[in-house]
Amino acid sequence: MAGAGALKAEASGGMPPLLRRLLQVVPVLFGIATLNFLILQLAPGDVVDVLAGEAGAATPETMAELRRSFGLDQPVWLQYLRYLGQLASLDLGHSYRLNLPVRELILTRLPPTLLLMVSALLLAILLGSLAGILSARRVGGWLDTVVSGVTLLSYAVPTFWLGLMAIVLFSARLGWLPSGGMLTIGAGHSGWALLRDIAAHLVLPAVTLSTFYLAVYARLVRSAMLELHGADFIRTARAKGAGEWRITINHAFRNALLPMVTMAGYQAASLLSGAVLVETVFSWPGLGRLAYEAIRTRDLNLLLGILFFSSILVVIVNIAIDRLYGLVDPRVAPGASRA
Amino acid sequence: MSATTLSPPRPLAWIGAQPLAVLLAFAVLALVVSWSAAPSLFSSHDPFLGLTAQKLLPPSATNWFGTDHLGRDLYARVVQGTWSSVTSALIATLIGLAIGGLLGLASGFLGGWVDTVIGRLIDMLLAIPNFLLAVVIVSAFGFQTINVAVATGVASVAVFARLMRSEVMKTSTAVFVEASVLVGGRAAHVLLRHVLPNAYRSVVALAVLQFGTSILTIAGLAFLGYGDPPPAADWGLLVANGKDYPSSPWLVFAPATVIVVTVLAINRISRWIRHAA
Image 1: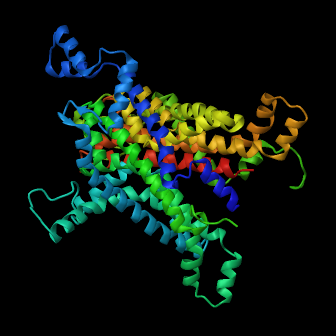
Image 2: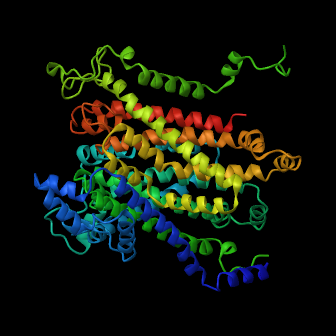
Image 3: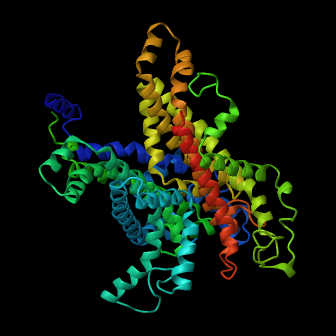
């Protein structure tokens, strides 16, 4: 098969795989941009209507003047080309409500969202794997029953309600954790105290966001582990005298990693969706919260910017995950020779 | 008659052979559908009439789920809100199933450049966070239940298309399908007689599962203030309103429990469809 691999590389001009992958992304981004433009065109009213409504009153002359200054009097295809050109130069437009460039708004809100998403995903992967491994060790045991019960339940519980309940229990009743925000306002912490403050604020939203994914990973790892039950290499390891835990972690669990990585790719988009609700419930100052504010003020331009930007984020995460495959499983590494 | 004879199954015996949880799930679904179809049959209270003297009462024999801050019966409001919470989820699922199913079918069955184009389209849709997409569509076209349903449906097209495509591709390469093509079966015949009957089960299971997910999505949208404005009674909106009265926890618990039980039932039915022989 080495020959076929070489042929393939030649056919694509001998490009490095990463570059080829990046080129594949272009039509996807182009499609998302087109969808955005379609929504913008089909939506009743335009920016000028909104601004006029804001001002209370506007003469038809002023509105025509404004339309000209935004380029809205030009034919649709020209507006479309201009829109694509703007996006290509990473200009996401202007939020007429907040009077700031959309890109700037998004970039300031990005770090909290990334922090929340990464913590939730790590939590889900770690605890989910643990739950999956433990319940696969004794199928039908009490732990297995509890885990599958919680899994079923977490597929049916609305995230926002879970967040509300967490606030009621851990903030209002017990007073252990703060109920919202990312920092204690006015505390002026720095260094360690600041990190501890952020961590305390992070716990509830991260746990709330992770619950659903935790259940997904628990189920995935459980079934992956059960599939390997009785596999030849497991029997060999046992025959060599490897301990049960060593077999579980080093031999069986390693094989469950690949489906987990695939799953993480699928979930990048869904995590961003979940972040909208969780950030709203916990007033976490991220992209989701920004989207919620944009909804309230009907700032469509900002919303479309967030949608476009988060789609790019998902695409980037998926490229990163493609790279990760090779690390997790040498058999699928791009340079690996296939027997 | 012994159990091993191959007589056609009698409906009653067949029903009795299903797991209890599945029967319960169907009962829950039937109740919710009836709430949706004829809300006035299920509650004697007026969901919009507030009696301020009876505000924030805990659950009792007369007010099963208690009353809200305006003295409206919460049970009546939950029943009233079923239509916009559940029927819109059903519409959303049907939209996703119709568009996504057709795309997946065309892509998997025709192959070639059609498959390439649709495959890219699915890739693109999968990269868009679907809740955000629904939010954007509703913001652009107006806060109404029907827009919420359409937005949720459009956001689920990719999932259906992906599954339908892989199922159709799987069956299209099966030996009996190839045989049918070789003996001269026309494309429409092969598709309707051989490919679809073998591909539909997992797609139907996904549709039922997606129905539950859509209920959660629509509840989330209503929680954020989408959908019809108050005094509408979407389940998500009821939870959002109830959270402002922490001393009356039933205002949050009752609608949330109804959501959870409904979705649990639907998920159980989906699993039953996937595994039932």
